[in-house]
Amino acid sequence: MITITQAILLGLVCGLAKSVICYTINGFNINTVIFNAVLVGIVMGDMKTAMIVGASVQLIYLGIVAAGGNQPTDPCLASYIAIPIAIASGLDTNAAVALAVPVGLLGSQVTNLVYLLNGFFVERADEAAEKGNDRGIALWGIYVPFVVRVLLIAVPVAIANYFGSTMLANVMNNIPTWLTNGLSAMGACLPAVGFAIITNLIAKPKYVIFFFAGFFIVQYTGISTIPLLLAGVFVTFLYVTFTRTGNQSLDDEEDDDDDEDDDEAFETSGEHLLSNFDILKVWTRWMVWCECGHSFVRMMAPSFCNALVPALKKFYPEKENDPHYIEALKRHMTFFNTEGHFGGGPNLGLSLAMEETKSKNYEAVPGEVIINIKTGLMGPLAGIGDTITWSTLMYLLIGLFLPLAKAGNPLGGIGPVLCLTVIMFTLGYILTKQCYNFGYSFAENMMKSGIINIVIMAASVLGLFMMGGLAATYVTVSTPIKWTVAGQTTQLQNIFNSILPGILPLLDVMLVWGYLRKHRNYFMAAILVTVISLVLGCLGCII
Image (cartoon, rainbow, N blue to C red; front, side, top):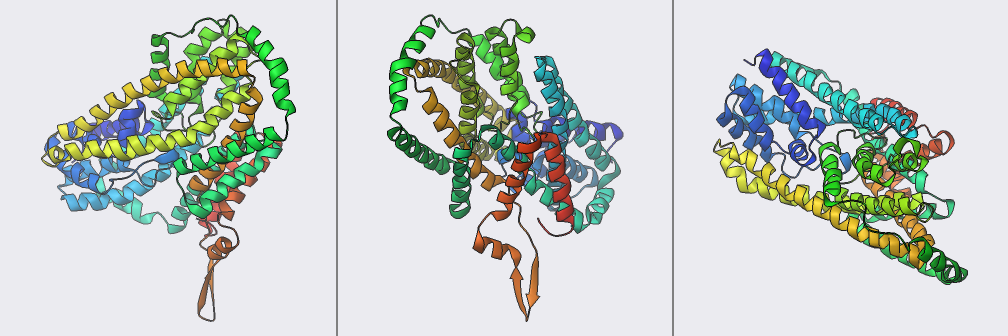
């Protein structure tokens, strides 16, 4: 029997884990079972059984990674229901595993609901940014979504545990198939909102073709983000090279004007404004809150902006009274999504460097350069981080400690997350610091050499190319419609694939993109996609 106190505690602990506060620790928890089993064991007062059951459940979730914010199943939610019910009901490990599977699948749909709801709060954070109110950004972009996310998870988990496995089984069995299809379709379509937002922000008509290039390269080849980046760099290099060859006046203009002006502008650039402690503060704020305000509309943008606030205040001491400070806040409230360590660290460091250089000579560094560099880097760096941190190092550490867990030892759950946290926090700080130092020199030299127009061009091309490829990866809508004539079944999706692979995901992104070009209402775009995709999914038109 699970008491009301235990049920509430299990719900709150699960909610905190699912909020992903303290990124490395709870990033570990949302992808795995083993450390959650330790926490369940503490609440239930039976550590040995919790670890043994948790180790068995962990085996079915090896390799689960929530790449790009997309989670196919939910090991975390499964842990806080399957393990305590197994302990209280005396279920064997096989029965616990069987219970974990449907709960995990349902949990991924709860996550989609949270990401959708957070889009409403982002609108309030935008209003705060317009006023230079960084506290308002933190309140509506992070803290309110954090509390709501905890409660949305805690309440159903507490109820499910208190009323037991019988009620849970009835709920799971009575969810109609058409509703499940609708929720799946919604999850497949909603990522298009984020990609449409950032593409709308950085796209110029002459560069739009590169979005389609990235999209169809992934559709036809299925390559991952790292080779996509290499292809993007190659395409960008060729485009910039041939464009410059055909426009020699650009070189003349750089030689005659920019060098002289920029040398004068940076003559007194001075030393760095940020100390090592300042950089550590920025990095720590990012590590604590980076996933808490995650939404389909902006992904991690409010957290990125919030992390930069202490540094931006040093760059612009007048804060709310300085329009440049307000512009910086608004600039970093644009769509951003990456892996927290390998993606967050370098992007933080480079953004700090560019913002510092811009604060000393505001017109020298266009804001679109900062946005486009972030955009170009966030996908490839996320691929590196997901591969190294979450797909390799995390499971290597789990493998090392799993024998202890199977023996009922809590060190089997504590060891992997402790090691991963220490390693990645240290590495991420080093990446942030070094990219700040490198980026500052890069920004200053870029201004002096007069290549700013080339950087804008290259960043736009590479950014759109990567956005196209990532959209092809994460927008996965398809249609299950089929019909039979004279005993032969024809699937509509196969016809689409033979004409143009990925036509439905592309149509999804293009429709949202077209809406945003006219209305620029991000939250309404998310609502429309949600309603339309849910209805079409429930009707069986898409999945």
